[in-house]
Length: 182
Image (tube, rainbow, N blue to C red):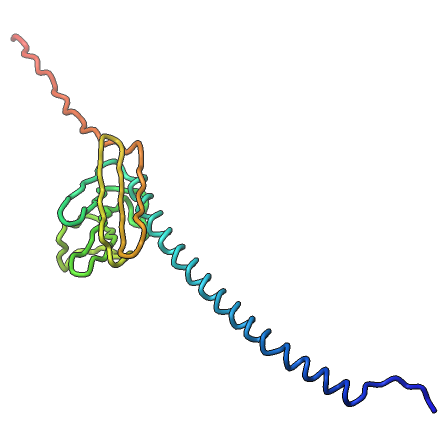
C-alpha cells in the first residue's frame, strides 16, 4: 500500500463550508468600504469647490486697486472696479459679487465697463457659486475689509483682509500764469 497523503471528501466539504461562511461578510465589508470611500470623495470634492470659491473672492479683493464699492440692502453687493485676479484673462476686470434675490444664489460677475443692473448688451462672464445664501455681508473700515458668508444649514465663514487702501485721487496741478509787462 502506498502512503500518499490526500484530502478526504469530508475535509474538502468542510473547507468549502468555511470559505462560504467567510466570503459573504468580506463582500459586505468591501461594499461598506466602497460606499464610505464614495462619500469621502464627494465630501472632499464639495469642500474643494467651496474652498476655490472663497479663495477667488479673497484674491479678487486682495488683488484689487482698492477702488471697492459696497452696496447694502437685504444682502451686500461687492464691486471691485479693477482687480488683477481674472478667471477669463480679462485685463483689469471689474468684478462684482451679488446675491440674486429670487433664489439667494451668490454670483460672480467679471467683465469691463458694465453697470448693474445688467443689460442685454453686457459682455460679461457670470459664475454661479453658492445657493441658499442667508447672509453675505461686507464691511470696510479704513484699509480693512471683512467678509461674512452664511449658507443655509452651514456654519458661517468669515475672513478679513488687511491693507486694502482706497486709491488716492491725483491732485490737479494748476499752472501758474505770469503776466509779462510789455
